[in-house]
Amino acid sequence: MKTLNTVAAHVIETERLQLRAPNRGDLETYLRLAGDPRVALKTTGIPHPLREADANEWLARANYGTRRTFVIARKEDAGMIGAVHLETRPDRVSAEAGLWIGVPYWRRGYATEALRGILRDAFGERGLLYITTGIPTGNPAAERVLRKAGLKFESLVEGGFRREGIIQDRVNHGLFADEWEALHC
Ligand SMILES: CC(C)(COP(=O)(O)OP(=O)(O)OC[C@H]1O[C@@H](n2cnc3c(N)ncnc32)[C@H](O)[C@@H]1OP(=O)(O)O)[C@@H](O)C(=O)NCCC(=O)NCCS
Image 1 (tube, protein in one colour):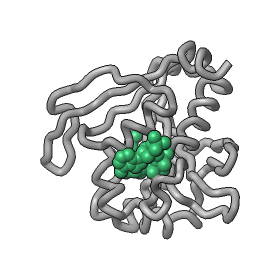
Image 2: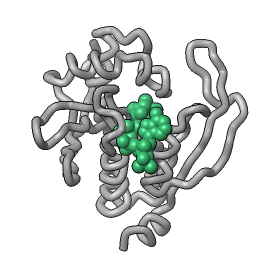
Image 3: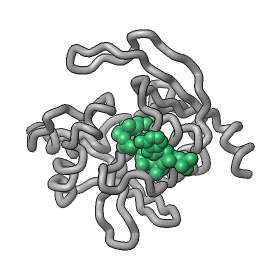
Image 4: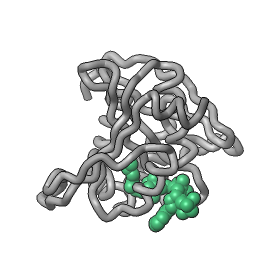
């Protein structure tokens, strides 16, 4: 495996969660939770089936270049329950977000809380101006999470999502910093 120059990610605290940089100790949980097809197949980036080499690659690239990845861990037991990342675009002021929560932890508000945490950090601390997400159609849970965190529907791209030979439509949502401020200040 190539050694990449990584940057240290900081820690983001929310009421019940800590968002922190991934480490080798997370790999087993990553394989188990992200390896579930109910999670992997809904994302753009997680291979399925998920192998150990894929998990090592995820860790190596987690905080490399324009990508900042955070493990979502519960404060109560420090256990990893999911992950969230932001990929900054070349303009350096906008980024694409991606998020997943392991199936045993669904429907407890964790995704909404983690996304709100990352938006607060991105807009409030890092000075980003625009965050977007693109997800395949037919994912009401993800759409609900995005809307609850303040992202707005922007466009539907026919055939805009392709994975393992299957082409689906892509739903784009976005949020500008001034809209986020209006919601929170
Ligand atoms: C989408 C996902 C992140 C949601 O995680 P979660 O922690 O269960 O979400 P939350 O508990 O914060 O739920 C937020 C809202 O979505 C709703 N929701 C959650 N799962 C749902 C489902 N399967 N169907 C419909 N609504 C659902 C919740 O009821 C809640 O709305 P409410 O407060 O009005 O009741 C999780 O299902 C997941 O990781 N899916 C696979 C990967 C994925 O789709 N990633 C999204 C890319 S942005």
